[in-house]
Image 1: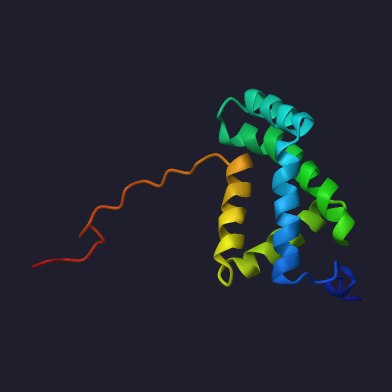
Image 2: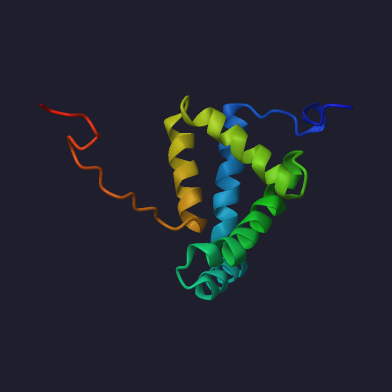
Length: 126
């Protein structure tokens, strides 16, 4: 059984990853892609399940179209590998972290976490 990881894209430096990330963000802003994303959002109607059904495939395709030129496979696995690479640089480079957040905001709905009550962690106070 051969390991599939070495056959993947050549690792990018932080600067190269930043450049590819900028290109991906720019691709989302292209008129035809912005229209595709808007149509997918309209179809999803702010429903998380429908977001995954309609919006995520469009966002994945837009990313695939860019990253395949940098050695990533032009499938979902290539997008996941690119995402992992970007994630690995987020803690080292605040600019990459900011760009990554901007990219995610383009296709992930804002997540609201339920409030955590202070002092209600199940710890007895008596």
